[in-house]
Length: 116
Image (cartoon, rainbow, N blue to C red; front, side):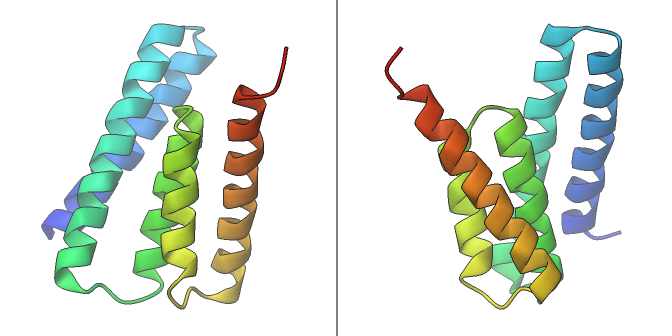
């Protein structure tokens, strides 16, 4: 197993544990595990950039990281991750998901600045 796969698999493990914590209504643990998942996915992306990883792996990792960033309320980071993947050549179905994630991040991020 290469390092990129190892980090991605760890990210997915943390995301699964986070979901279990959410179901148990353990908010702090849920947030902690989501942060760990995002950190691992970002490590995978860093390796992806070093190794010139092809599609669809590149866009799949970015889609996963963008979704985790939204879950972590890091909306601007989610936008950047989705945009980076869209700047390449993602498969059409993944491109559509990336556009949806980017729009969702933009909407949620804008809500943070909406007048009360």
